[in-house]
Image (cartoon, rainbow, N blue to C red; front, top):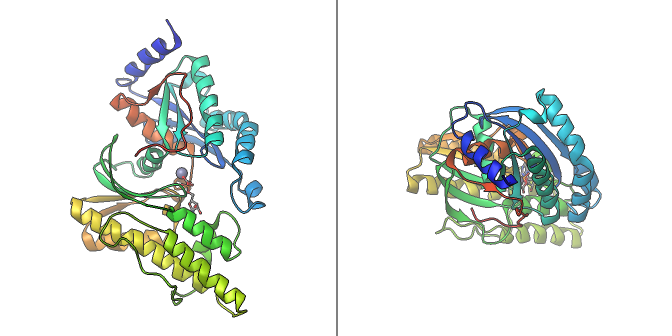
Length: 352
Ligand code: KG4
Ligand code: ZN
């Protein structure tokens, strides 16, 4: 039998297997991560080797540098992940990998690594969408969470409202028409002279400031569930440049707090409206910007006001990690979705 025929048979058999142990690989940006996840909910290990210190010097992720470092790191990350879980490769039931969206060169490292492992071990290879992985982070943090729910997807690559009708049934409600909210946080941080990654630094600095700065900005697309962040980004950048050119003093903390207030309000207000329109009972946060404390507070407030139940991933599962993809891969398998053959390749974008 060919590799694919064996993998397909095993894939089918996993639907009725009591315990399914998935080895998941993530390399979509600047984190090399491998996790072992049982039954979509239990993380046995989740090793994340971050390249933040390397990319800091450039003020952002340099794709080529990220790919080269994934290659350097990935073997060691696999060894650590197995060791931390107390498992060997013989214990694994399937190999899952994020194939997109992300940086193409970075993704290719993980995809080729996962293909090689799956082929050598004669195991099913499950191709996971990065966005679905972020949603999966919530199944780890909340043992009782089940769809349907409205997902507020906020990361460096995506800003979207997604109606999650079932584990593997996703309907896009609205998304950004230009920048993602994460890009906007990172750009504002950069203009304020904060180091990469900017989002967490804005979050920290904003705590010391007040929401008192008026930018030349009007929230856009108010009659739609789509987002636009390029206007806010430009308004903050123009404000800072203007002050600098005129040699006028300004408080970076106040700029950070005022920007953060507008960005998080845009997301929270649209999420609340969409939830009300869809009649959602549950709301779920996903993605790196989901770690933002002000956004979490605001969504909690709107959940309380609109009687939604709010679910947020633990902070460590907000930003990229392999465990989240191992979680959603389990549900792909249950739904008979995601089985890939050795032609699988990386994709810079993937439809929701
Ligand atoms: O989900 P993620 O790790 O990668 C992508 O899929 O893009 O998200 C990374 C983004 C970056 O833009 C980063 O600045 C932002 O998430 N981020 C935050 C916070 N932590 C990470 N933004 C605002 N506040 C935070 N605490
Ligand atoms: Zn991500």
